[in-house]
Every structure is written in C-alpha cells, then in structure tokens.
Length: 134
Image 1 (cartoon, rainbow, N blue to C red):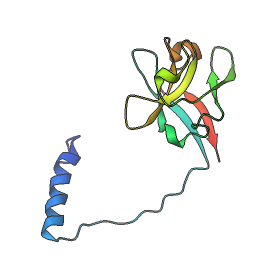
Image 2 (image 1 turned 90 degrees about the vertical axis):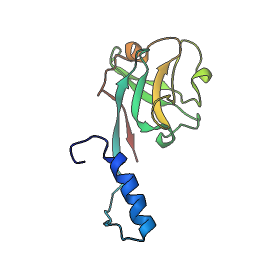
Image 3 (image 1 turned 120 degrees about the vertical axis):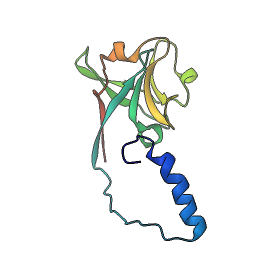
Image 4 (image 1 turned 180 degrees about the vertical axis):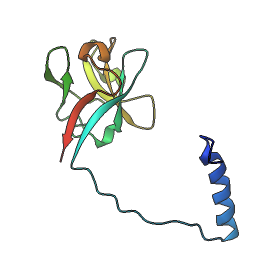
C-alpha cells in the first residue's frame, strides 16, 4: 500500500470498516496558519494555451467581477488588469479573462477566449501569474 499512488483506494474502505465497527481512528490535529501573501502560479498550460492556476477561483479577490486582477505579462514587462468571469462564454472574444476552469474542482484559469493566454502573457508552467496579499 505504501508503494502505490492509489493509497486512498485502500484507505477509504479500511476507514469505512473501522467506523462501521466502532473502532477509534488514529488522528492528530495540526494547526495551520493562513498565508499572509501568496504567489499564484500556473499549474498547467493545456493544449489551447489556457493557464490553469493553483488556486480556487472563489479565493481570488475580485472574483465577483467588481475589479480585475493584475496579471504579469512577460512580453510587455508590466502587469495587465484582467477581469474575472463566471464562465468561459462570458469572456469577450479575443479578450483575456479569469474564470472557473474545466479541470479540478473550481480552480481558476487564465484564458483568452479564442486564443492562447500562455502566448499572450508569455506564461509557462510554474510561472508566477500574480501576488495575493492580505
């Protein structure tokens, strides 16, 4: 079990059995401090040039569409304001936008509708897209 990447496949049935039997499940609490500042990075660039980010969209300030986020544009050497949208079809054709992506559960995605966000912004996997500060 320790050598497989599918540990949860083995763990979940075991846990269910322990709970059904009334067994105590070994556990310990761990304090987690929220980050003060966070660099949001490109997790994956898909075949269309969409930049899948490493943060859920709902955690982005301005995701409600009231204001945009300033995305690093490596071609221009400056940050560009990009608005958040609920869905890809809401992003104006040919324009950049940040939306809930199709990969993962609710993760943000930097897109250019009808184009490649990776090409427009000069981004690759692992690149920093913007900073979030509290």
